[in-house]
Image (tube, rainbow, N blue to C red; front, side, top):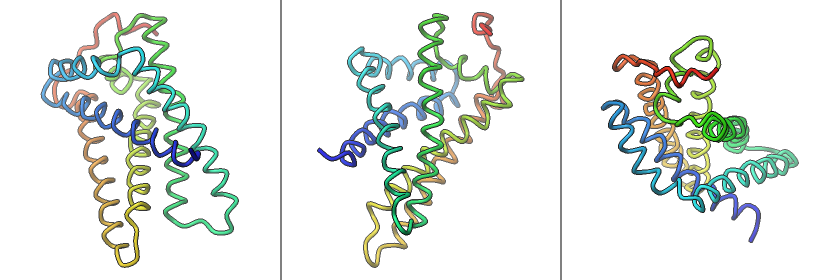
Length: 203
């Protein structure tokens, strides 16, 4: 199987996981308890050892194969605007996940800290962490959304259907922008007051 094909398959797996993850965060709009209930339901699936290992392998392969594709695209004589955006969004998302996944695993295994609502809220709510993590999370989430949009546009693009492909790509980006806005609004304490428990102040 070609590298591009495996990249696409692992990308679909990651897209399903990330979409469920962002949905979970967005549902915090209805309260921390709602967020926790959905999180626990999802964890029964993705915290299964074999599934968790497969997810990590999918992310790892995406980083490797994505960088290979960037290298191949740069060898082309001319790069389209869509390919350029695909490269930039992929690189930003790679930067995000190579930090995020090890950080989550480290907190969970070393500090024995539940990486739940409070874990995520603390770093966007309290200084000095928020000065780094607010742009970090925003760029990570939007890079993923843009990457999905331009990849979808590339698959949809056919002669005479460019306008439809453009519209759907813009729609996907706007959807991710709205979801990202909702998540930040809640996790930064604008929807309801957030008191971070003492045990989360490990550093």
